Length: 501
Image 1 (tube, rainbow, N blue to C red):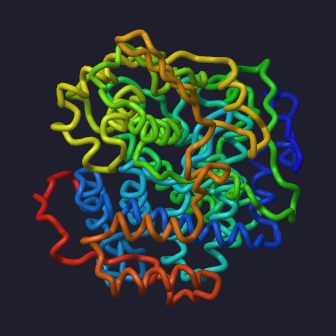
Image 2 (cartoon, rainbow, N blue to C red):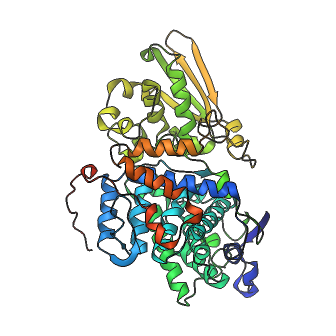
Image 3 (cartoon, rainbow, N blue to C red):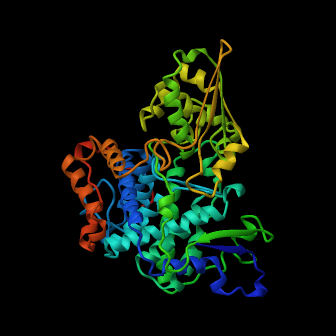
């Protein structure tokens, strides 16, 4: 690995392409690096993981909206939509839109946290859709996904968007563009221009994850992916982009991020070095913001130690800066304490999440979020006794550069009405690679079968799992097998939503 120094340069300096971050990303996206075996296995795991959550969200309103929009753009040689017959095909950018929304809706797939946030699995729907339309093969998909993960993970390590209230999809646009460049074996120049266009068009604010959080949280990554596909299409036709997009005098760094005086260091593999960043990422056992995963596990264990939750006087969660200010009381969002809040808001409230997990001793991707569950009197009472506070110890652990020592947990201090105190802490979620029960292929398959139970037939389940685990050997004609068709009786009748398309 190497560290790329990235800073603003005045126009008169005429910064050479080879010294620009977008070019260096394009170089690794167009190289001939060997593929790491463990990385291949993880690509398969994440395709299974994405399929799990996409199918589980099939009948949810944002997913229905995205699917109906996609179906208005049929294409004979296009791409498939999760849940529908593989005979149904649409333009690949619209398949990416529909499938990307389905994958993101439940907040239940993989994550990587460092200087910024990300869900690298968001790269997969776009890469798979383009692969289906452009008749790529399984190895092409593996290479494309590994590039997407590599670029996004390393941008997240090096450039913090959150401190400037810029949404993390600004790292997804370039990573999807780079992944598509690898998938389609494009020239370095074409990928370079595509990355710049994709970044330029995917800048948006973090208001999408603040206050009253709406369904846009689910749409946002799909939107970035769709724009990235269109950017690559234009650049394949010979079009250029605003350049240099990161280092220019009026660039993203100069006027959106930290300004001309800031120097960023972005780690990247060397040209032809195997891409293994996917192995640093982690999925979710629970359908909620990743920083709540370990605390849900801790709440489950504390449930067995406290006989009468009504005797709790106060709960304090000591945790990292990010957890406190994003999903804790440090966010100063009254909506995070509101029983009438949207599901999207509740899954970004550690106070709500911890209260429910402590009461129930478990977490469910549907039952834990129902309006009835959120309005339960005992839950509201417990919920409002919870506060968070930042502790430097946990912030330091959160930012540890060693992936084996990086932590996303916290310490919980429960004060009882009788004056006694119960406390416990946890470093990482049980499902984390360093946790008590790390996710392996067996757990990914179990998650798939659990989430698709009653939605996908046993025959279809076994067919899909056999197909995806043979990813390395899949030919272009086999890629439709990576789609999953749900049972007709599992499709809830939905009203046709009228729009422009």
